[in-house]
Image (cartoon, rainbow, N blue to C red; front, side, top):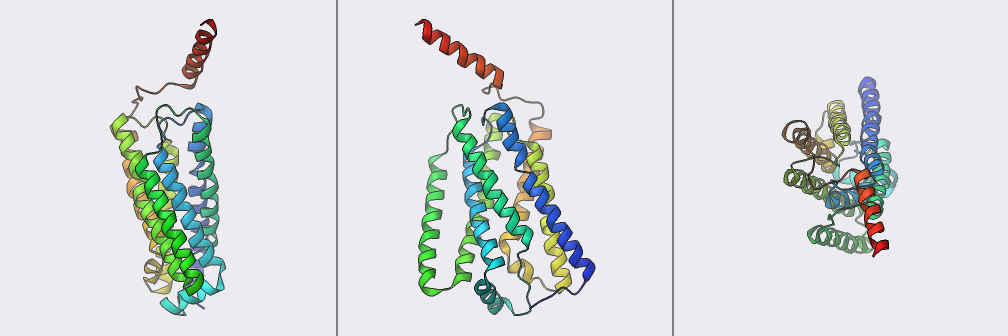
Length: 271
């Protein structure tokens, strides 16, 4: 079993891992709090939330299996070498578990708060339905073959694909509205910090082991960092440069929404 060669690098890896976990975990709360305060999810793209839930669910399955299952770990070392370290840390499992929970809460908020004329697109529903159908088929195939590492590769591929496409609907929506109102920039700043920390953590492990297998063996974690950094920069440019101080002309503040609802009820009663 592989072990760390440098104690300082190992300590730095663990500290950075948990700092990344904190940044990424906290990053979910600003959007949830913003939705709660506004009693509205107008400005939050529903396709993004659906893709995000699919992505983090797949990532949780991958992380938990590789971290806890001796059978999966054995297949990993048989493929990549007995001396290679398992590229999943405890903070990865903790993060993905927390991410699934908070994303599910966002989805629940979409169901109960004011949505305006927004809805999940048919394209997003089609993509997610296809993804889970493929995952189910692969799972039942693996039950007979016991090629668990192959199954994890499938789930890792799913989370990579979801990571690549999940930000696109929100970025396009911001562009069409010429506004980032309803979309929490604090979420993006924390996500950016976590992504940079996550990538640096992988670099530390590679330096200690003198091998790039850490990147090859966990391409999902690598893509998670790089793609997130790219889109976080896009969102920061939209918020601080392109659409700074711009409000969505089609959105209403919570008070105005309540007044409008109250007026509608009074009119209905008079009629």
